[in-house]
Image 1 (cartoon, one colour):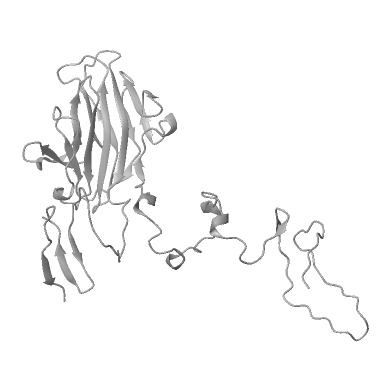
Image 2: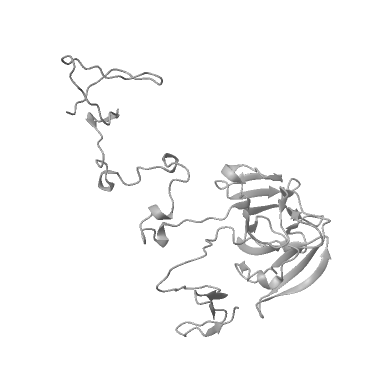
Length: 318
């Protein structure tokens, strides 16, 4: 016999019991007694909820018990590349929600939090101090625009901590290489003397003290009107901060935009796996090192070109 009833309101600590009125010396067996919550007027029975009955996007992350979902419970090939969203954590924020949080700066935030409007004499800015560890590379992105007619050396400079020594590497636009331009420079900048009315964007690098400049990669720039530098920490230094710099003599009400400055640690958003099963490995633009298979054979992708076979270097490892 199976039955259900509405017992009223239960609360934590209430007890439930079964009372049977039967003839003397009769036997009654009760097996697998349980209480289930009713949903929409019907009891939920085993196997009643199937994937087809769960609305798309209806299960939120906070509804899933911690550590309950592992690889064994995920159907093979059910997660596609387009379903992955891996983001690196920003170390320096681009004026979050229209505020100057994380910055000590004059001026006002404009353009839905995208730019800091700097106007003399209240035109200096400093980020909070952040770590730049010896073996890490950090990407620094920003945009600049001058709103005033300037000439000579009266522009905006953007660099790292004043008085702290940095090695300065300038990018050679012709050879596409970084060239050491100054060692232990205590007044080091990424971009010098910005006076242009056009808005330009830059991507360059902050290097930990143990990093080789060859690991920095190429910078990004709107054009080659301004030299682009990377700055490398030296000695025992493991932290720094973004700062402005100027020469004296700017006219009153001279203005610039500092646009979306952001610092990311390179590689923090990458996916790392010990075993990746693929049928085809294809990339539009990639920098490869070496891949080793289960037979401990090594394949060198460093100088691979499209439509060419990759050379098998054989059992290189013991």
